[in-house]
Length: 350
Ligand SMILES: *[C@@H]1O[C@H](CO)[C@@H](O)[C@H](O)[C@H]1NC(C)=O
Ligand SMILES: *[C@@H]1O[C@H](CO)[C@@H](O)[C@H](O)[C@H]1NC(C)=O
Ligand SMILES: *[C@@H]1O[C@H](CO)[C@@H](O)[C@H](O)[C@H]1NC(C)=O
Ligand SMILES: *[C@@H]1O[C@H](CO)[C@@H](O)[C@H](O)[C@H]1NC(C)=O
Image 1 (cartoon, helix red, strand yellow):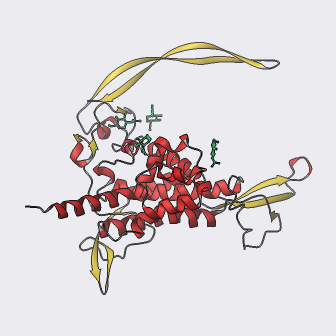
Image 2: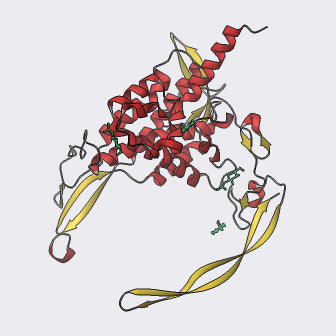
Image 3: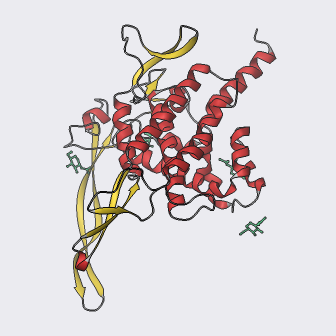
């Protein structure tokens, strides 16, 4: 018979590993407070002590953290709208279902995206002057070309990475309890997210000169937008590798499964446990199933009716949509449109 103590230990180990992205629960309540009193840090019971401390010491950052939580949800759902697993379970934060708790490929993606997003949001907030503790990124070390000079205000990637990683890595680093393999996996995938973010830094320019001749250019380093970063990470999700946490010499490392002797790369997303196919509903596995999902009859990709509906077939509905059409511009200054009706066919998985 299991002792009550073991039971408690199990409970807390579940709590700790699931706590790692519980901050995404700020989507629910995060906007309703002013974040000007350290009491507000208690708002989300799922924050680990180190995150709580970061919150109390950097209250001014919390609005960005809330924004990052919302952006993570939005970009995740956009990136996966054509997939059987469509990131809908992220909305359950901070109470996740097994698809995001069990070291799956999907959790690898969400961790990496959340990690990239929080640093992105902070780096941008610095540049837009929203934060008292940081400002524009440092002037790049590269020498400016003959045709441009450094100027403007670049995203402060350095500060974003520093504060973002402190926040998202804290649950794995600050506690000894919890599943070690899952923690190492989460830390790895968090770092992959930040690497994709760093790689997205590009030179952006603005032209000056007589009537836009662009004889003088001012350039700065800016991050690409989050949908681009989510797309990069989605490619890595599709190519993710299954790993084990195994003794290698004196320490434990993540290694690929049998027969695959390549070392785990810093650029690849990794997962510990295989996912269900997400075709049928199975709450135990965190699968919501694809019944009633829309599919695309002409697509040959993952949103095709064949793949999305897992071969079960689909129902066709016709829907009438009303839209603005034949718009005319009248000088000055308004636009008048007619209302047009159009019927579209919708395909819905059985
Ligand atoms: C925090 O902000 C709210 C709303 O703006 C205000 O009512 C409250 O007095 C502020 N608290 C502190 C400690 O500044
Ligand atoms: C949001 O706030 C309500 C009321 O304070 C609380 O019951 C709930 O647990 C909070 N939700 C999250 C996700 O923190
Ligand atoms: C995502 O999938 C869930 C579960 O199948 C479904 O309820 C939801 O409507 C889907 N969301 C979108 C935007 O397709
Ligand atoms: C369906 O897929 C085709 C081919 O990929 C694409 O051109 C079309 O826009 C899609 N339709 C919808 C409603 O998403």
